[in-house]
Amino acid sequence: MTENIIEIKRKVKRELDNDRYQHTLGVAYTASCLAMRYGADMDDAFTAGLLHDCAKCIPTPEKLKLCEKYGIALTDTEINNPALIHAKLGAFLAEHKYGITDKDIINAIRTHTTGEPAMSLLQKIIFTADYIEPRRDHARNLPEIRQLAFTDIDGAVRQILHDTLNYLNTKTAAVDPHTSQTYEYYLKITDSK
Image 1 (tube, one colour):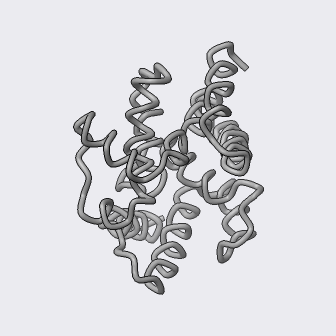
Image 2 (spheres, helix red, strand yellow; image 1 turned 30 degrees about the horizontal axis):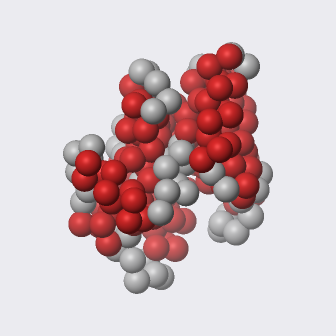
């Protein structure tokens, strides 16, 4: 582990509650394993995993103020479902507070909740690692998705999006259009395989 990653780990631990920090470590280590499997940079995957929820424990009113202060545009869906805001704010903080300059890491943090069509390998890794890390235990099809993640990352992304959309459709919260668009994209590319 590089000195930079050790320092980021120390800083993130101070910002998160214990449960969120343990989840964060789970995502970082899972992302590293997926990176090893698919030939991606393990340090980048670990770093993105460490920082993916760096804004999660900031209270919602403060998240909204920070987004306004830093000119982070929020959609109506994000404003109405503030749990989504931490991804965009986290990407901003990764760059401006934690000194991350790699755009792929920043994009992986930004898209880890909703995804986006044509994600990079690192984006798919962080999106998937967030869903399958060892402390997660309530999602539908989790054992199958965990196995799929190490054999077909696009198939895993598709299944995560499918299950997420099915779950969100049972709730009253609006579904972020990015999630639906991402699912349609991965449905097409995995059907063509």
